[in-house]
Length: 175
Image 1 (tube, rainbow, N blue to C red):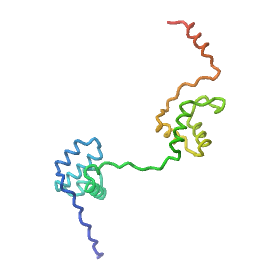
Image 2: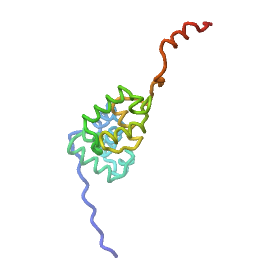
Image 3: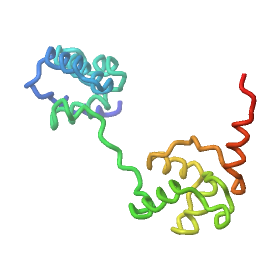
Image 4: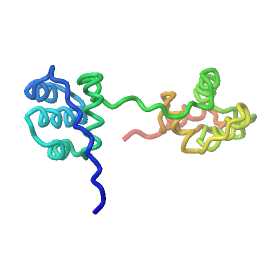
C-alpha cells in the first residue's frame, strides 16, 4: 500500500470581513469577476467546503486558494484582475506621433503612389521609415490605439476640378 501524502493545511482567510460584508461588497462591485470571487469567499466564511465555494465562483479549489491568498494580502481590491503587461511596443512615442501625423495628413499621391492609406500601405511605410515589420492586422490595432477608426473618407481623384462639381450640382434638376 503506497504511503499517504499528507494534505497541506487549509489556508485561513482573514477575519476582518464577515460573510455579509463580502456579499454586500459583491453587490456593490461593478466588476462581475470580483463579485463572483467575493461570493465564493462569503461561502467559505459561512463554513461551506472549499470545493463547493469554488463551484459557486466557477473555479476549482486551487484557483480559489490563490484568490484567498490575494484577498488575505490586499483585501477586496486584491480580487480585481491585474493589468496584464504584454510586450513593449516596437515603436517609441515619437515614432507613434510621427505615424499619427502621417495618417492625419494623408498620403501624397505622387510621392506615396496611393490616394488613401490602407493598412498594407502603412505597413510598408512603417517598415521603410522605422525599420519595424508589422502584420497588417497589427497596423490596424496601432491605428485604433492612436484613435483612428477603420472608416476612411471617400478618396478624391487628384485631377478632380471642384468648380466643375459645383457647376454640375447647380444645373442638376431638383425633384
